[in-house]
Length: 224
Length: 224
Image (cartoon, rainbow over all chains, first blue to last red):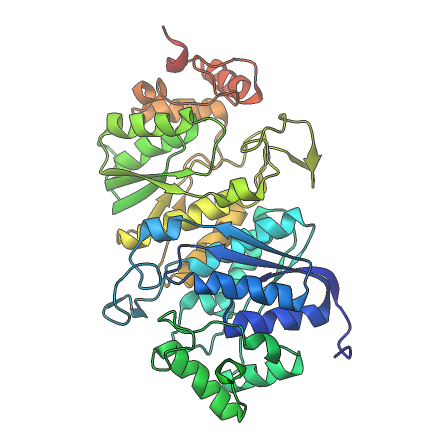
């Protein structure tokens, strides 16, 4: 566990409470001396996500867990993640309707503003380019541009670490084992339907199950 | 007034209700067929700014005026614009304490998310590099990087127009005359102390007065 030396004193991790961000939280714990989790409350349809983030922050014994409110995404509307539009019913611009335009840009910029206050230069997020949904704000080239915008705009060199960016879902499961995140994944939340135990049939549940199956690992969330 | 042909059908203008954004609103009216104003309610100490934005939107007879809430900046704290920290009492990172880290990055990203919904590719903001306060998120190089991040992250080509970027305050006054914004400037709000009529002695009032003086124009706000 301690084979990887800490590279920097402080990190802010975007923690949604899902599998990817939980894995990132534990990844960060290995590499940074202080880890602060940040959860954005943007009016998620399912409050269970926020509860998962809080439970896992306590379990991980990190320095702090902060929740920032971002009402605007709900005020903008138009996404199945915040509204009651059925998933996959409509799409625009070649994107699934779970796309909240600019969501990750806003989350990371808020994280950077928070990090600035903590005297911290390192952000960690679970964005993944190989993600099935193809959200353009999960791509590394987007985040490279954002890194520049933030560093210039705050006069504060900021790095956005994305340890999952080029991993398959199976590789992400192996990384979770490596960084000691398996116990915490028992408390993570993935299901789009907001169910616990998970519904097992929504796209998010199926993607998660596929990853664990390909890794040949049992999902702690499904253990009795 | 109609000498400048419209260059594009729709624009979203960030409207704070201050002199610069009001000038930009009228600039946009000349160049775009439809103009939508967007005001961000981030917990400004002075609600008079939001009222000014609404009054001016009506006066300008634009297509719409939307207010989005951004509570997070207040939740982050640490700036004299949202907290009761006295202005200029402390500074960090070489910046005045009216600096809300990432404020313009967040505002413009929200504006882009709104624009996306309106099928609009053009944002307009009153950022000015020659601004006395030297906020790094007002600089054109920051906004160029942000333009890339937004365009990539939303898969939606977005241009951030900043007509005041390289103008002196006196030149901004002349631009306001040119685009027909003088009547609206009577309703604009600038004073950091939130006073109307303005206090005349805060840095914002002094900067505004200096600009009008150098332009040799009477500020409509001060007319009886």
